[in-house]
Length: 118
Image (cartoon, rainbow, N blue to C red; front, side, top):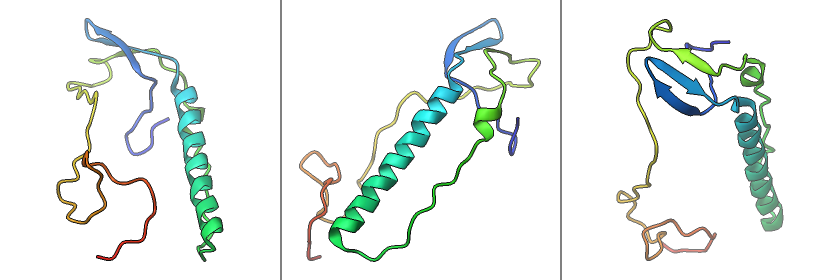
């Protein structure tokens, strides 16, 4: 199934001779991401409740497209019309634009709600 030209796949296990070998773990990964979203929203809802804040209820969309896709375990790049692969294997945060006292001594956001006067 393609949505906006995107095909979801499991993680890449190997690449050789114009082929990419793909792990059959897409549905497992999607389930983990879905559960992460549910847990994150629950944590926010719990905080809102503890603080007595008035906030609208969040609705979690049930996106099922990825679960309905066939499991692809190998991909012929030439036959698929793929001529370029961009590998993104890591990232790091850059908070250098933040000019407020909300970062700790390592330059990371302080993960605790505090009252600050700016």
